[in-house]
Image 1 (cartoon, rainbow, N blue to C red):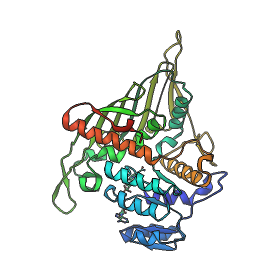
Image 2: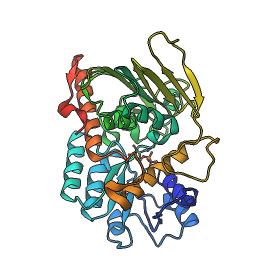
Image 3: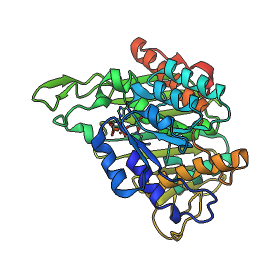
Image 4: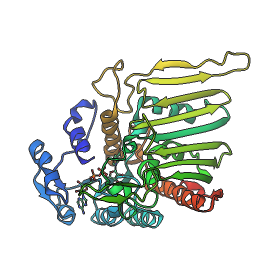
Length: 368
Ligand SMILES: NC(=O)c1ccc[n+]([C@@H]2O[C@H](COP(=O)([O-])OP(=O)(O)OC[C@H]3O[C@@H](n4cnc5c(N)ncnc54)[C@H](O)[C@@H]3O)[C@@H](O)[C@H]2O)c1
């Protein structure tokens, strides 16, 4: 993910009308081999395996940090305490206690901007749905479904990695790994889960360890969360590492009494909408939404939008907020620490629901 951000910085000129641009001045990775790409492509003045050295560098104003989940609490708190702005990765702490500590640290340093990564709401189709919801176009909401689906773990011969171990990924498993991505838009709209019945599954229980042996896969592969929201409508969320045929498929579907809408990255140009008035036909409209970005770019509106465009737009939102604060130009800030904490309340309740087989109340209305 660090290289994705480096690449976005390298094409900042793609954005029109930017007052500030990021400059990659320092890179840290515990694995020295991972830094070579940066030295090959940027004029970095500091390469280090010790992030504390990077935090002591006065030229570093902001940090993008993508490390395994067990390191979030310590490294994020150290970054914030050093007075560096932070674009952190989800799940924003390995568990609820870690997320609470990171939020407390952010609140102790209000001059530091702390946000959590989540690029999918910057896809044009997702933005359209967000704007329809904000405008109240759906009427009464009947139901919301959101999901993030992967399939590479369907192959049982894929070697184990840190995401299959509780010590490094966390007990949430696929929920911590994928869940913030699908909660970002609902939580921003105030669609907070108040309770959850979770169905969690661990499908591939062992994997090659890459050293000739076999290792246990301890984390949940798939999660289906059936929630009641604070507004009273049902919301079904699914995060799956084993969803045959799906490759990084993020979707959002909102059904309402006056309008329904659906967007999926599986078909990244397409938005499906169905306006409805009594007497009118119930017919879905299929529209190619094109390149309709939050921050204008030199790509024409007729072209396609993709993952690396979403990363660029998300980072532009972070830089915009860093530059302009509440008066930022864009209309969708990156996920806040409070929203990230809301996702932890939901995942913690989901674990209890799986253990007990019961519907479990979600603390704090799930938005922190
Ligand atoms: N936004 C997204 O779409 C997205 C996609 C994938 C992963 N992620 C998130 O990014 C984070 C990292 O995931 P990844 O897939 O990039 O993992 P990764 O294993 O590919 O990269 C993690 C890097 O952290 C380095 N590292 C480990 N310990 C370190 C330390 N103490 N100091 C410095 N560097 C250290 C590793 O050497 C490695 O290069 C996770 O929080 C994950 O959930 C986000």
